Length: 609
Image (cartoon, rainbow, N blue to C red):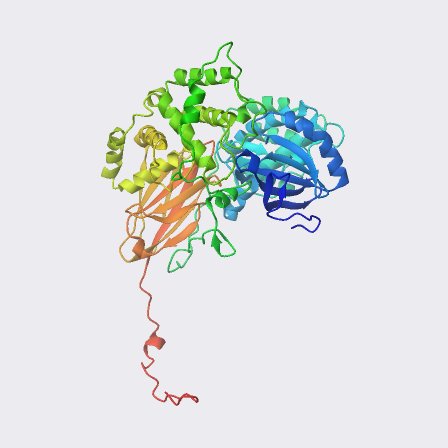
């Protein structure tokens, strides 16, 4: 319960929205942000703005109908507004992902900056969103690392601070949004707070890595940050044109700083974090998934082994109905997702016909596709007691899956539904011949399949029908896997560098002498992650940010490190490792002490010595 609000966790509003936890409070323009569940819409997660300040309340009551009419894949879809508990309540979609501020915060200080090409790609993705808002007479007004979410399911940046939006001319102009975007870019490039770099004139190009910025990038950033009407961009479209003139791939990449290993290793690796709990109890699957809400750096995804709540009848019913008339236009881009706002009316028959046509064009087996969508419905509904899935919800899930399957090569798409173990065993055997265990190969495939599959099976092969996508990923990705061999030696640091492709993974095997601990450190970008496995493929360190760690001698040899890159551009990693002996030298003075006290003092209570 907040100081100014009579509502608390567990409160149900409008006989529909059950409040789960406070996401943000203390900002008058946004009010209190709550994570909630919508009992009417399958118990899915939504965000509720609780607005109590009169000025913000009046402003948002005017703006919210316009927000509800907007359809953009990088702006959360807005729902209803209502009044209750002496406040205005606004409903919008919940975005699963991590804010860019938290992406940086989970890294060591020297790694808190992004490669140049990654920042330019972020600008390419955000400038059209600003143009969309400005074209509707709106100014965002607040563009911070904490209010831009990198969405989990597609890695797109999403603007979540709608409560700060104003009508153009009332409290801001488009150039101010462009200034905010430039400041955000400078923060990501330099790793320094916005005011330390972006607010200085002229701009200081003195941070580590600034020498790699080309003239085109420097000019772009200078104009974004300029307050001079003669120098700054007149519109987001102008900035987009200037950005398009900078060829991709011609900017100097960021080279990670050398890894500094500790002088003395710990006796054992840091303990894994305790399982999430509340008041001593383990959280349910639904609560764990809810903790992946806006800003959780390592969100907990859906589990694949769930009980079935629906048969395939709904899917077959929808796809068996024919449609007539002209093809309907495609669904809005932001309707392709599990977190969408339900459509106001059921899908028209010609939408189903369009879906069938797309399946035929992609050469996807309809029977397998129906089982895939039905299984997704089961995953979504397993932890909720809400009503049965509606036709429009099934269709939305189907549209999302079509968009995902389009990523696969045509030759693999037409085989979905008939793939088996034999189809990827050749690639597996090639890697096993290089010294990898079958379990490690499975981990490698699972890392590559993260963007295609809806959940994380901890490196295990998922059950059907998802197993078809897992095998398809294995066939496509394992043929190009490179395995780096590194040897850790005593009393000296071994250094290694390698490039990880965008959306890809790299496997590094580390040979460690017997009876030695492994001291390991990896630097890269905040969008990289590492998983450490034993020679048998058992997870020694769960997937997490690049870091320095120590593994005990019992971890064995070789130790295998899987590094993934969730970024939109390739990035370089640097690795340093050292083998430390496990024997602890004996202290000579301690060795000279007698085993027993020659003159013991009796215990005053018992008389024992």
